[in-house]
Image 1 (cartoon, rainbow, N blue to C red):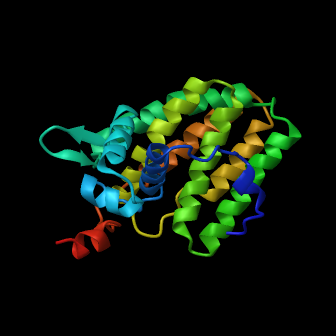
Image 2: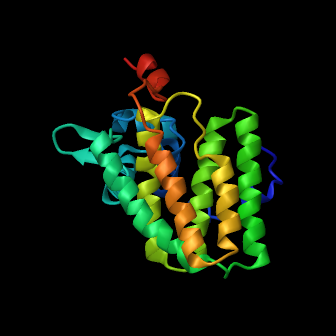
Length: 236
């Protein structure tokens, strides 16, 4: 993707200041972009080798991700990427509808031209990534679109809730969405932007339709790749 693309700077995020934050941020993104398969064991030794950090740093990062419910951390099995079930999908999308429909309702008719341009830039960047077959970038940008709306609503709790739901959504899509299905149906994002320029009921209805469409796209289980396999294969 072009580094000068406005969508890359639409949500400036401070770079990680510690090794723990770097590990956290990277693992979060790996899960969000489906580089880590649901159910993957997150072994401290492998992670320490990948990030060139101590196992203490890795342990701190895993505990932080577990507190945010991004990963599972069990005393007997260690850390692993969650493998959500179809029953989990109903709960996740139910929560997303409650939060994001309210976000859309609050934002309707209140977005500035700059905010609308920011959303449009994300949609255009997602479309380019999808056209180029860069699925990881398309997934990231789709999540950024939804996160941007939460940030624009001005309630940090909405942002935290959504940031906890996005990785689980991505894992559900990795497990149950047919190969080749777009991360988010792009025309729905375009229609959402249009609805946000109207009144609250229309925006909330369009958001609900969009999330229901994603949920309905979840079908059979399919295999996903393991990004730690190269490390595991080279270890004694």
